[in-house]
Structures are given as C-alpha cells and as structure tokens.
Image (cartoon, helix red, strand yellow):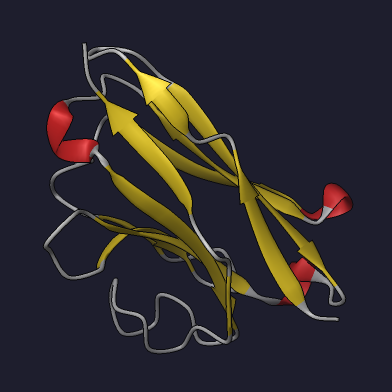
Length: 125
C-alpha cells in the first residue's frame, strides 16, 4: 500500500519548535520530490515548503522563510519539516506530500502524487 504518514504534531508554546516527520511506505521516496502543506481553520490549504525530485529546487512560503527547514533521509524513506520560532499563525493541520513533479510549478499541490492524512499543530500559550 502506497502511503505517507505524518507524525510530530502537537501543542507548542509561541516561540517553540517542532519537527514533523513523514514516513513513506510502499514506494521509494528517493525518486520523488517532497512537500509540506498546511490548512488553518477556515482557510484554504497552502504550500509551506517543497523540494524537487532532483533536489535542485527548494521553495518556502514567505511566512515561514528563515524559521522552517525541509529535509529528507532517503535511507529511512522519511522527510521532515523543522519548525522554529512558532507563532499562533502557524496553527494548522500539516500535510506531507510527494510527487514526481513536486515544486516544479511553485508551492501548489499540482505535481503531488501522494498525500498524508495530516497532523495537527497548535501554537498557544
């Protein structure tokens, strides 16, 4: 079964950090681009960060630049989103995604072939 499973979400205080993980199963992540998206309550899903399959394109949403870092470990078939200096506007359900055409047309969902079911992140004191 081809799937992505997120973990690492939770409740964190403003200014804190979290690292989200996304484990791929049923396919080798090595050949795919990766991405993270989020959807806050009452808002549309938005792209947070992505990396192309070749690794030569990396994008971040302006709202997370300098605070979030996307990375991958192909040996473990896992990729990550390190989130620092979190604030209330980062509260959302975070989704990981993978696709052969990931990141080639920007931070949108096009190009993504597989999606996780999401992990909630709440930033609150």
